[in-house]
Image (cartoon, rainbow, N blue to C red; front, side, top):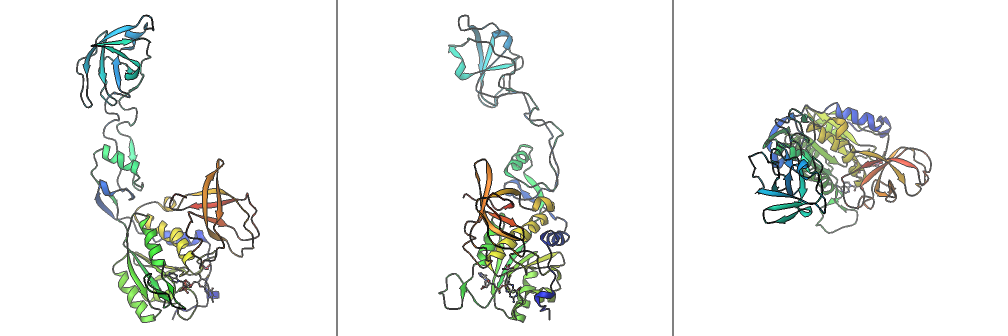
Length: 417
Ligand SMILES: Nc1nc2c(c(=O)[nH]1)N[C@H]1C(S)=C(S)[C@@H](COP(=O)(O)OP(=O)(O)OC[C@H]3O[C@@H](n4cnc5c(N)ncnc54)[C@H](O)[C@@H]3O)O[C@H]1N2
Ligand code: MOO
């Protein structure tokens, strides 16, 4: 039996815990997906521009292509008259070189006729029949984009390990990649333990609570654009838990559990992880919440034993599960972490912290800087502090933090606030 008194477990800091997890990320497994499904995945190829962009010299506005030297002397009193020799619809070209005294009407993005070197915007021109009246000079290059000024042929646009943002998708489309090679997403399972847990549609009875962690974690996975299989609630029963974890591991690459990590008689997760062949990477942390978070590795799969306390499970997902999932898909561990910024505390945080805390908080941009506040007492059993959390504030161990203190702030899934 694995039931260690908590005092015999060795607490480790976050960086160490993360390093142990990262050391067990398997190499990404390539899969090919249609471009329309590639956002949020990690690219495993190299995208080299096989042509320049724009591919041809083109108009930057709707108007008239002309030769700047023809209108050098144009003025309100002595306008220059040019002959409109063609009107080009989008996608059409003017094949002859533009002659002296000629202009071509075209649209934004149209290939610029040879010979022309500048553009008069539609709203600045006067048209009389097939004559364009120009009342001022125009410098060469006005509203003209040269071929290749955006992207040069041969430029490397995406490298293996790049995250596919909507912008990355647009260059993939432009360079004709309709199928892209990305890292396979892990299959994720969620399993919650506890005899006291009711389903959300069950009536409340004294001593029991409605189970929320599987829904919260499912939502956290969904925010990554992924799905999870929810294995439901498993009672605190040693053999049953063992059987359920073992069979779940046949179907998933990442199994997230909540509850059962503490030291009570029924806290069976560390023992179960061992019984299924797991190598325990850590079972105690030197910060809160989630001090007893237990993570194990088994044959390329990861078992995340998060606390049953909702606040601790919430934080544990963001600081451990999410980086692992993103790294599994091929992102480098550094890039798999949430962005961190310094934020200024809006109000004092009183009290003495024996351990550092990742406090649920809320940040916003105000007065030219990022300000943040905690959302109330940070007991890991509280749900109230989760509702509006969009950040985790790292509060070092120690004394009161006065308002105005700068704290390291982890920005979570961006949501309106
Ligand atoms: N003697 C000690 N007791 C505890 C210690 C300790 O060091 N010594 N550590 C405490 C800390 S810190 C934490 S965190 C918790 C960890 O507890 P478990 O992960 O074993 O979780 P449970 O006891 O199963 O549940 C804790 C709490 O959360 C509620 N819960 C559980 N599952 C869900 C769910 N799916 N949805 C909503 N709420 C859930 C559960 O009812 C409990 O109230 O241990 C402390 N104890
Ligand atoms: O470790 Mo527990 O600090 O309450 O989540």
